[in-house]
Length: 158
Length: 349
Image (cartoon, rainbow over all chains, first blue to last red; front, side, top):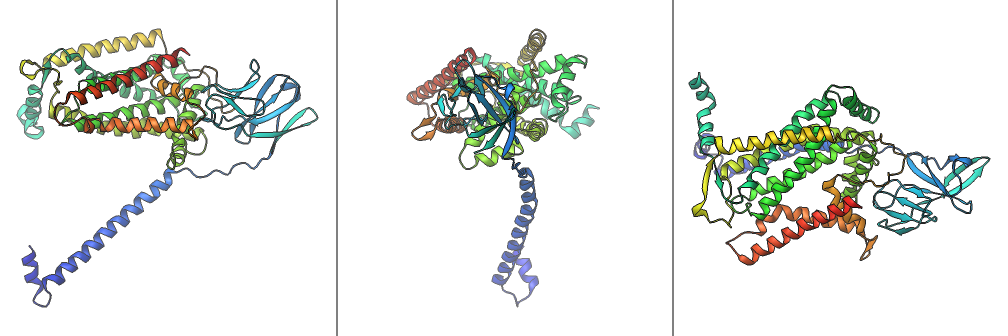
């Protein structure tokens, strides 16, 4: 095969010139194959990664009416797209935290018997300052500021 | 007619191969049935899954209601849906039995390493099937299971967060997650499973059934696969249909309450039984181990075990060696005991 090609190209082109020409063509073919593959794969990979949705910039929200949160109880409220929890302690003090467990993101609840915030998924406990006191949670819950306006409980990011 | 077909499809070659297939008969032969049983349950999944597709609607607004519609309005909908759920669970169970029997009988030895590897791939595909299918009814348990499960993937350093966003279709578990899981469950996973299943079964035909090293090969009797073994398989499959129908009728699969992204995780929430041993482990891990988050360490350990599972045949190679055989047996028994004990504790607490 090689011989035949060499014969047909005439005396002016030596075998080394031919093989370098072949190498050049192989190189062109290889790079264009890679480029074509890249042009196909890249959009596919980008397509699979979901676009960033702009987070709501809400910094405060009406969490509940005062009478919805009696002493020694808690209530989940929407803070933008995330859940929060507002708790009224035995002494009547209002506290608000992110309701997303710091362990594996389950939603926590107030446990009146233990007077703690509890995550049912892996039995994590937080005290009423949001501190992780038992079970697997590695960090405290994010605490929010609580104000009352009339009979409304207003929660805002600290 | 037969000649015409044979010329084009080489049927006689295939049937000659099938006629030649033999199954060794010895005291461990019972374990040969579990691969075929798993395959049968997979077929049940395909059939019932396609039926469910006729009515299921994959969106956060419609999914729960459409499953409700299937089990209350559609004729025999409760049956098809329950069989799909029960068969999925039995499939995982027979898969685990198949895995451990192959492990303890050391059927993965040369030249069957790739049969083992393709089998482990199929195990993980089955688990992905279970995990993605669990979300589809869009109920509370499924919602939190998916939250926790995808968060576990997100805990893995570096690659974790991109994987989490890819799985969820965003930062949170939403309708976008449901749409993705639906796509994985009915398109990506079935296609992948079919390829690996074909390879797995083909390799079994190529190498024949493995005779355990503990059985002396001289006095092993053989049984024709067709019809002797196949008929025995068939009895098993008919029994399986009976068991599935009984389970579906006596213990119809619960639908639960519709998922609510703003409700606390229900008390007593638990994952499916085949995730229980990992779930229970996560519960026991303290918040911090050696300065690292406990769950990160636990999850990395499980990942490592999963990787080790792939390389079992490459670790246990070379000539017979009493010591090594013993080590593998002990590791296998310990792993099995750990899974069983943790599953029971997880179930009871």
